[in-house]
Image (spheres, rainbow, N blue to C red):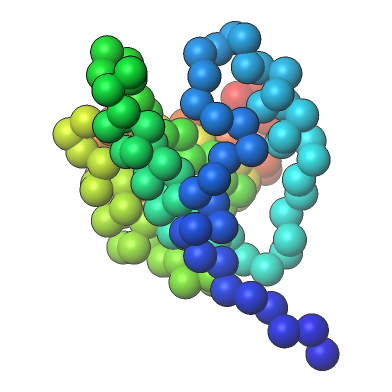
Length: 139
């Protein structure tokens, strides 16, 4: 039996591609995304968002970045599930960046209802939803 390690925010705090202006870093981001796939062990939204938020806060606090607007984008394939994740926990993490760091949410899948709560808590009006049960290309 293989013992699974619980995801921790520190697992997500060091980005593979650091914060840089777009579109210059576009290819690096695409390469990073293509190098990963779901692990079928849940949706570790809380530790992933905690790691991203902590990194964003640290980056924003650097004097050299004082004139930059920093945001977090949470892209997920569903509602928080497993890996110490639940909707109230993710909502709290999204709210922790305010007022300086807003959280934008992109949901792709069929179980996306609670993602609007995360977006609102993160200071944005609603999540962008892509329902895979519909016309994904059109959405």
